[in-house]
Length: 329
Image 1 (cartoon, rainbow, N blue to C red):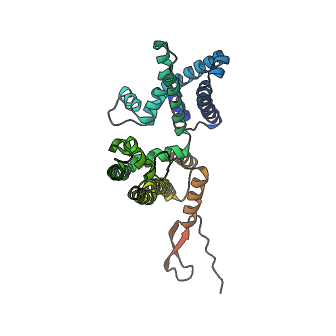
Image 2: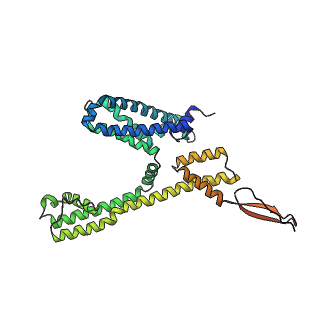
Image 3: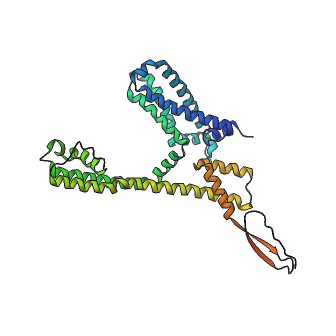
């Protein structure tokens, strides 16, 4: 029989739990979205003053719900698997420092700070927008994005490091060429950094422009170079997305192959595959296509004997039963 803690973990962490779990997760998603919308509406002073009580009641309700959600996730954390010899307390402490747990904590801290800071600070109210990151639990693209940023961190750092060097070189060049002519704009390298940045990223606001032939030539060269350099992080992100999706599909495929060793997927195995699908942020359609493809392509070898001469022979066939039709002579 499933324990209450296991059921809680299944609903809140694994996004399972049947219809009840689906209703709870949909409610959490709607509450997060509504909370973010309320923060946006509160930035309008007239709306904030007119619906002050309504906004406060909603914020109080959201705060209570999110803190209960956080406590339940910490409580159910040991159901996610413990290291050998690890206590429940240590497992929960390890969960608390995970990125998503930190986001959950940051989502409720602004309400606590409101009791200690009497001034209505815009930055304090805006901190509640952190709740939007809680949606990454339910948005497949956000989960994949975080994984891509994690695995491609070194590559991203290299790309932005090179981009930063080129921006500094561009700012230095335009300072040398235009510094004496436009000292208020290019009189120093720090002042020229704004022009170099918007030019290299091909934004080009036009608020700061070179006037000499040399400055215009440098600006054109930097703008053309920026087409490639600015697109570099986007290319890294695109390739990272593709690699991450393929990696997750391969992980799911390996598990399907493992369960199909007995040429059959039991109900418990299908449930485990569905849990794995959620953890890998794969859609049901992707999972179904992978299973069907493996069922079609997986071939087994069956030993049989000729009914006439009794000679042994092997039959290669897809997963399923083998029917051998013997033709009468």
